[in-house]
Image (cartoon, rainbow, N blue to C red; front, side, top):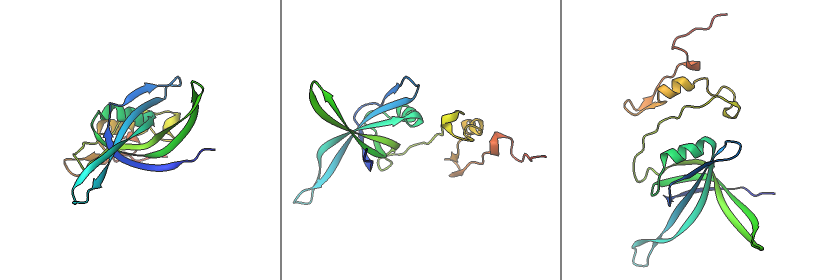
Length: 166
């Protein structure tokens, strides 16, 4: 039985994400995130405590997008579940922990970011109806930074104003 512990961390990437593909073709990105605790001294001044390093794993599209978007030193936020596992190495019992990421994003307290939607591929793992609008999404962002508002995307990738006939 496994215990799932939800976690949120904010820190900096220690290295570029390491993207690999498993035998089944599923993308897996390994990230290492350093989190520094801020400590207030008795005189009221603030300083960084010792860093805590977290191993983070991301899978599928999240892994590919993180690998293409992030690099060493980037401030990131990660939401996911803490996973523990026990194993034996050289006759010794050992334990390891990692965060299996559900979301990863840049920490916007320290800079700005430009969002660009990735085209989705149609397939069984994408879900019912996914990919029907992929052509429209690939050519048009869902949000326009220039107008600071949503961009209208025609339903099912067809031209706007199409009417159904029976």
